[in-house]
Image 1 (cartoon, rainbow, N blue to C red):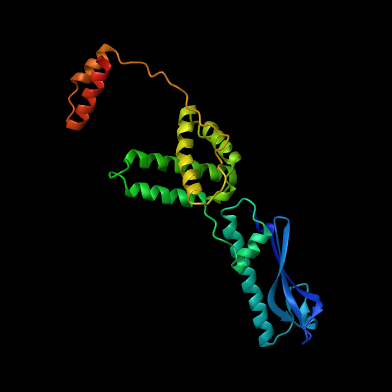
Image 2: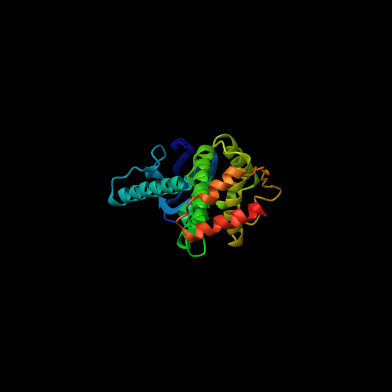
Length: 256
């Protein structure tokens, strides 16, 4: 998103003059075509205000300090805008104002929650969770990360912005760009759904993005092993006693 989408302008509220003859300095934020206005809690003499530069014209220490305060506020507003821009495709002016004023509630994000989920699984690897399951979430995380970058040019997104369309767009991306087959796509979506379930359980989102969406797994005929393949499997030395037992159980099932 370009800097031209954000404009910050300071001006005097000349329709209301304070008892000391000064007027309140207001700031107008324009972001992506939307506007919002709020008071800076500062004031200035209308006779010393330069509307072209949005600053006071005086050279006194107080005037210079006031202009420095404006510059600091402008830099801070821009910082809040660019921070919001990391997670949202289109940042509203009101959100920038609220963030600057410190009244924005913390927004839980998808990839942040995903990382927390993976960290928990990784800490349980070999205890209650298998390493294969951990890797399953890692692969899904990477696919979703690629999707966010390709579709929205974002590294993360607020959970509250994930809806039914996000799911269908992700499915389309997996099938086309990632070239995953039907079952691989379904398995990625099953894994991703666990993150959404966690978000709902924690109260981060109210609705269910997967409502009215059915994950479809296609039945695959895996065929069968030939007599020669069974013989090869039966006669192949397996150093691990546990794996050998699994092999024997499998062979028993094949012959019964």
